[in-house]
Length: 116
Length: 116
DNA sequence: CCGCATCCATGTTGATACTG
DNA sequence: CAGTATCAACATGGATGCGG
Image (cartoon, rainbow over all chains, first blue to last red; front, side, top):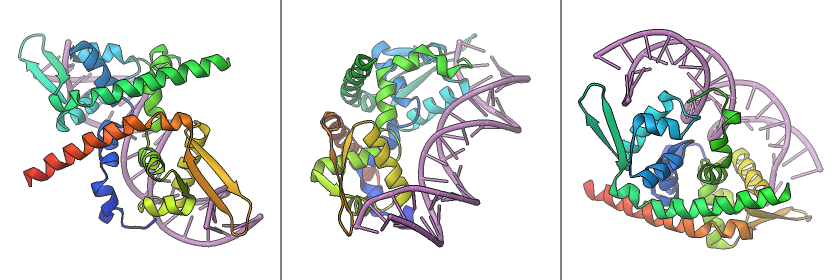
């Protein structure tokens, strides 16, 4: 409850916060999950797998994941071009977490449907 | 990649997306984690544990977690008032994942420090 | 002590058009 | 195919003051 957020030591060293900043955002969880399910996906395939994403957000999100070293980006200099995305080792380490989270989500969704 | 987001069936049923919407946001992860560590925390204690949060965001975030049935809110009608927060059973079910995520974050933070 | 209300700043996401 | 660029909308977060 103070003003100088940047100087807050709690945030700088809190690993929970650190982790959430890396996999938060509207699409990162799903992208990581789909890359885990399919091993390798091309740009267009990812776009079709997330029907609600725009090219802008897809590119932007993939760049962030790449910078954070969670995914690999492999470019084939061909015509037409081809770019493949896959999880890095660090990214793979997140999968057990996302798996559990997904199972939790499935359970909650079931519960919600029981009400209706 | 389309216009009508509300009608997208993929999002409506994707449990990964569902789960991330519930524990996403700037503070939810840390709040859940601290409530797990301390079992019960009062409003002011939570505020001090998250030094970078404002009362507005603290209240707002706690309400969302309460509505999603992840935390309990117990009000003592005393003077001065007292409100205690704790995890619900559903909220507790998330802890293994947050623990896992935290361990991953710790590891990444260590790696980053090794570079410097 | 535990909030709520208001107004404002910033950040995130979306729509659309266009390119190598 | 795999992106960029631009502008606009919307969501999130912050500062401050007030109230039961």
